[in-house]
Length: 197
Image 1: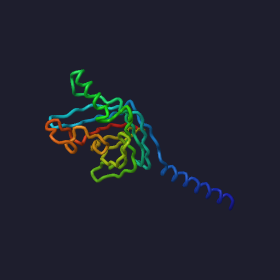
Image 2: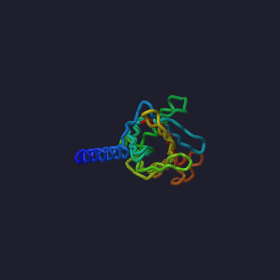
Image 3: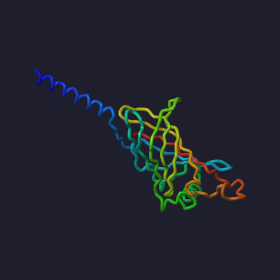
Image 4: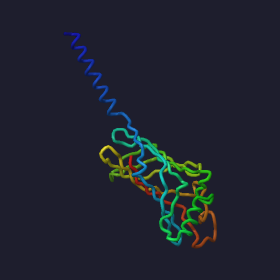
């Protein structure tokens, strides 16, 4: 009888340990490239341009329904413009954005954001902190995201505001060049993302 009680006790403890381990386990989820997108917006004195860039890969690490890590990689060779109607002028802008004046995609074909941590905010959003790498330069970046479940998938959306001059992209910047007038391009650009994991 004693042996039976000891065995039952061991089984209970083992089960409790397994339940606790599973509850605290981290879960890694791959980015669904077909259902994810990134759109960019760049502004200047006389207006703005917008377009898209394709995602190459990504992952999200969850623990107890909290985002604790992950990353996503953008293929900078796929930069596209969406607002210019003329094929010629649209092509010229895309070529310029890919040149060394801007993202230098021949040498730096990828840009990446790595998640370091996150926390829930009182407004229901999630503050994500991490590091973004553009043109071989890595800087800290934080921004708010909305996140919710779609059955077994996780949908994350938000907006990054990035100071391009931190990544040696100074072309047309009033911070570095004088007398640009209406040719001045704002330092900040935006990346709006919709990611499904």
